[in-house]
Length: 458
Image (cartoon, rainbow, N blue to C red; front, side, top):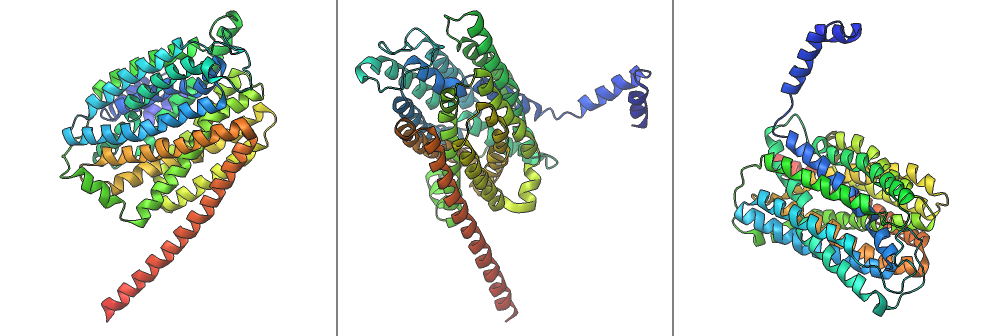
């Protein structure tokens, strides 16, 4: 090893040793987990090229905030059904790879088809995909075709694609049992790298295309990037190892047994509130930036900043959970969501959203590994995929659904600032309530432990 270090220090004098050093490092790459990292990178990179810009695209097709809110609210409802259904099917018949592959193919096809959705007939944005849309209420007769097509295509997309990430998460958790030297966060952070690395490219490509083709659809580069990258993600999926799976005796009984414990019920409430927060941000953040006349580059860079902040927290998530426990991580996440929303509500300069987005490192980078780890711990035998999909259904389904449909109303009638302020209050109340519960639970368990020791002595 000292020879290798010397070769680097002298700079090129020992190229043979440098090559050998690189070869030795490559041999140490975990061939089982390497396809997992590549898949996360490509899957999240494809998603960020398209999904964050979707509310703005629908707005510029002529749909208003309430219509966008309805579409986004139906998607989480579909997510609940899809996650429970596909998770159950995969666990019952042990066909996890096929279920993921089917979701990617059908989901990508339906999402790509939204590009061809016609604009609202009498909208001021009809035929102009780069204009700032009207804020006046639309006649439903004028927008029904656009609304219906977008609703149908995105429903199919969610029906087949919403379970993919959680299905891979459950498989990774199973694979990691053979590799105690690493953890989930070190695998999942590559999704953050893909999300952050490609988000800026998507925004800049849209601005560049709009500059050279002012009469064209500025969202074309985003769609092309998303479809191309997702197609590439099929390769590591086919190479990925799926852990041996034992079929559960009764999935229904296993699910019912989960919700008999207060601690698990509280966990799902926390996941729902965080999903609500993430759904509001995902749906209305870019609309708010659009109201502030922010360029697409700023929108893309917000995603880059969120992912830059995610990486260190995902990398250290295993240590954070071991040191502080799941409850402490959840409490800090809720506090950071509160702070984030209050900062949004006072934002004037769109460029200042970039430092605010660094809080996302805790809001998601610390939350998701902790939630996936907790779900893996409470999952009955043979039901990892089902429980991980239940977490996704609660977060992306119930939580996000409540956030988007209520947020659409508040956004249209009270503005984005009030929407973010109210969300900040919700997260603050949840933070205080959960912290109080966690402290009382700790004191109660400590008291019971002492009581148990006393009885044993007697």
